[in-house]
Length: 277
Ligand SMILES: [Zn+2]
Image (cartoon, rainbow, N blue to C red; front, side, top):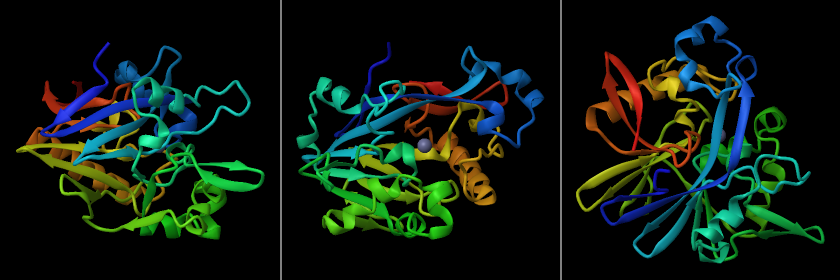
């Protein structure tokens, strides 16, 4: 079992999971014909599905404890393959009270699920000592009546109340979360999608967000999924970033790759591939 910790200079990243999701190919990649997967079976699970880990990356930087993304949320019906985040945070020595900042790569439902809980009709933060960061563009998108139902279905419960609670902070462009962590706009999947660049002690790393959903896209950068809101921008962002990460050899923490989700983009037999770290 690979370690669920990675260090970049003085920054420590711990990968903590909320569970795993799986989708049929025709569901998640409706525009990619089945036969195109013929040579890519090793990117799929034994049931021939795309499988997603739901990682929350806990970052320690300059005395701050930062949770990047908060999974799908509680296992309400008792049958869901998610809902494990709080238990796993505690098992990793990081109870919710220890989190100072919750940072969202974007505001899709599988990244915001544990933000809040409601008691007696009132919302409370699951992370009682944290402030919550979102990109301005995703904040606007998740309030757009044309997008809420199809693209941000749980934002009304998991994101909107942060404003009345006075807990929301906004980030735009290249925004410094700490002097070691800077956001990198990677739009397409959502309008305000953010990756996070780490620069510490002469080393670099990146928290990728949903620039990738499956390792096949490291090479097939044009393969967009139904979750990518703007396909053309998604393709351009992914292609540019994969080229850069390969060229610069930057270690990657990717939320949906198999746990813990640490890897590098390398070239093997003239193909760009995900190499597990
Ligand atoms: Zn996602």
